[in-house]
Length: 47
Image (cartoon, rainbow, N blue to C red; front, side):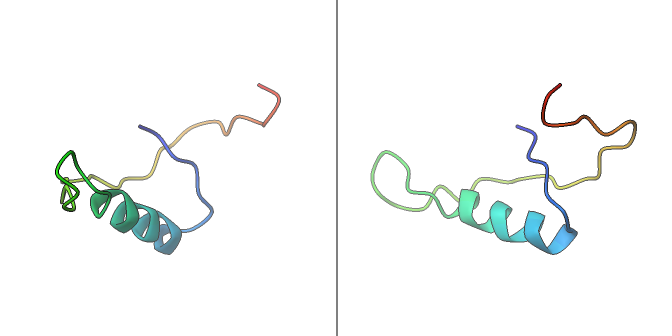
């Protein structure tokens, strides 16, 4: 999954929310997530 955010702090916030999402039994899944920058040409919303 790729999520485009403005700041690293926002990426951390979203990763924490995703990791705390409930699994099949209703308990947080505690999924390991990797956060890293994507380099290259930035796509626009119309592309």
